Each structure stands twice: as structure tokens, then as C-alpha cells.
Length: 177
Image 1: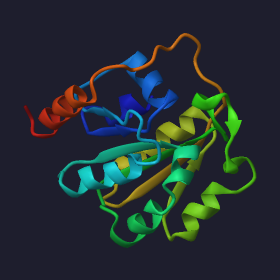
Image 2: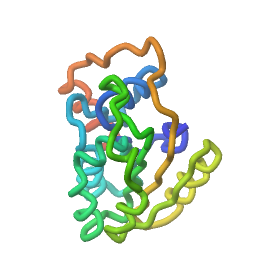
Image 3: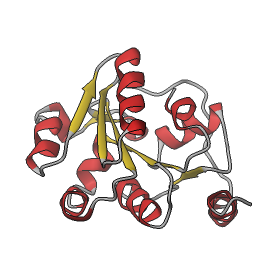
Image 4: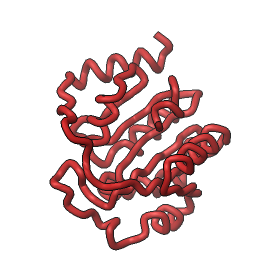
């Protein structure tokens, strides 16, 4: 669903199950899965957005957002107005045996708001779709927070493509080539 809403715009995806599941549905030139780089989708997404005119979307999981939590301060102070940060919170590290994250005991929405960032939250698909549409409309930094079910889709293979090839394809997509 997120991929459909983003369309041809740049989409930066956190490492692990999120990147693998998206790749199993669609591998497009505008997708940049961050292989073995947990906690950096917001940072990479912000960097791409600062150098890109159109809307950029970055997907973080709750565990990866917590790993790169300092990025929220950067987004609050210098966040590009063309960035949508999507946080998928299943309260676990699905790629690591479903070990609970700290999101199981703290309110990540309150944390994001504590950094002064606006949050549009949802816990069902239609609400997420609507939140993504609102984010795409505005000329502002948007954080879309979605509570999702835990676990992984069964049978999803590892994403073993060469990261340099993925980056080259993404770079070409950014430059219209």
C-alpha cells in the first residue's frame, strides 16, 4: 500500500523484514532498501529530500527508529518540507526472532511529538492510506505513524542484490534516467 501511494517518488526503506517484504512485492528503480543499515532510513531519506524537488518517503520500523532516534532532532531543526517519514510500529524486531523493542513499553508517538514533529497516526489500512495522502499534499515535513501486526510474511527470501547496483539504479531514477 505504501508503495502504491508513493508512486514514482523516491522511497527509502529500512533494513530487514521491511525491505525484504517490499522487494517481494515490487522492486522498482525508485526504491532504496538499506541493506544492513538499520536505523538510517530517516537520515538517508532526509538527505535525499534535501537534494530532490519532489516528495521523498522513508520507512522506518519502531526498532530502527529507536536505533537512530537522534535523527528526530535533526528533522525537527532542519527537516526538509518534502519528506514523509513513515514509522511502522509492530513493537518488535521482526527480523531478529520477534524480540520486543522498547516501543512495547513507551509511547513512540509522544516521543516523536516531544521533538516538535507533527504526527498523523493510524492503526488500520484505510487510516494509513489517508495519512499518506495528507502527507503528499502538504509542503511540510510529515511523520506518519502506523501500528501494525507483528511477525513476518512467511517465505520471503533475503534480499541479496548487490547494494552498489541498487544505489546506481536509485541514483538513475532520481535523475530521471
